[in-house]
Image (cartoon, rainbow, N blue to C red; front, side, top):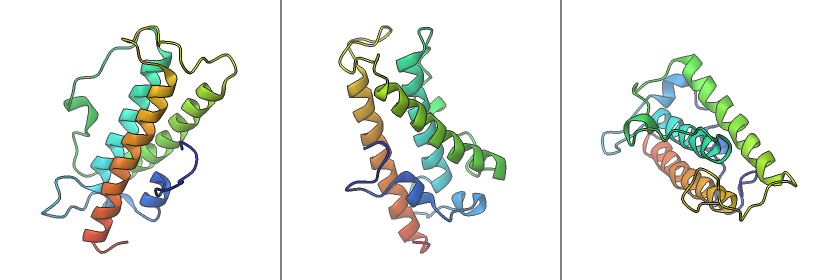
Length: 143
């Protein structure tokens, strides 16, 4: 589910062909733009990875830290977002494929969460907001 699009379009396919200027466009009836949704997806995935791997993890402030401050990205921010999404996803996939990882063991700094739950959370969260990106692209007539 993390590596293939299965029943839903992948995040990469949903943002394919979108440049940084287009990512900042919005539709008046929609509360976010493609940049905000993509940045949120990437940040949340990174946060979950950190939660699972960093024993000194500090939870970011909700909702402020989970959404970008800027409503339009620079070319560098857009490229970093897309690159970091892929790198963090690959890091999480490697974590759960690691033979020493116990998918059902409680995460040390958590409150009962485990790697399996967090993997499902990443899949669910990414699919939800990727659907919003597709809808927004349709509203903007760029799908």
